[in-house]
Image 1 (tube, rainbow, N blue to C red):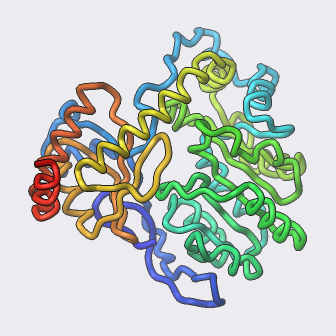
Image 2 (cartoon, rainbow, N blue to C red; image 1 turned 60 degrees about the horizontal axis):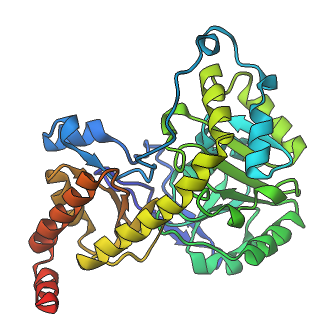
Length: 372
């Protein structure tokens, strides 16, 4: 996936070998950019931090209300016997799991647990996956959603974000398990990043992650709105988790982060209220974008994805009004997260009306005529 120099994501360059598996050429090691870089945007566009509406991250803007953390959590080293693992196993339905400092820690470490091989990564997607496997010496191939079946025989590892970020693509459970069976039969892995799965837990594969070669990553950052706590989990076979734990070392989570994570995972009432609210908000965002002539081509409860040849112009025009979106270049597209308040929703709709008129005047004229 090609990199954007302006608050975008990914890496570029590819060659076709073997069929269905495109090997990425870009091994520059340059840092990847992510959503939420509000200070960089504020500096670039000359707007103060408090003037921005940040829709670039896909994080729940109305996350779990964190209560005061007990003073004792700050005074002692973290302890594995505090109940966090039990709470996480109950929530995810996983027989075995390992807490990590956000799923990013696992994304960077897992490639070091295998000898170099061929790795297929869904593209477009969260670019840290490909970067981590490439940095560990693996041959990384970018796969479109429709190319996975063809590419499986050439892969030692298949990495999927599910639902995908940014396209929202999902695969039937039976197909995922079929791919896993093909890989596991020859000692391969299926790695599934379920960072955005919490609103549809029935589609998760966490409950099957004790199977050899199936590794599922989860995070508290998106659905729970706790990205700053840096808490994630790896669901997998016990022996693989033991190897990963040795690689990461002790105290991967701070004691306050463990306390907050356990509390939120036990709050079933909040989860049951939040899931339908977020699903409705995702539908509302999709409808708002359609009214503006920016019909989403994918997404999930926490974001919508809008491909457009004018994505960069739309991104920059919105940023000049203090609204930060997530820009992708291959394909040219925007990802928009959820506004947090009614005032934010109104601000977004007003800004989109102006921006579409500025960047896509013919589309704006067509919309006005249709409404007349």
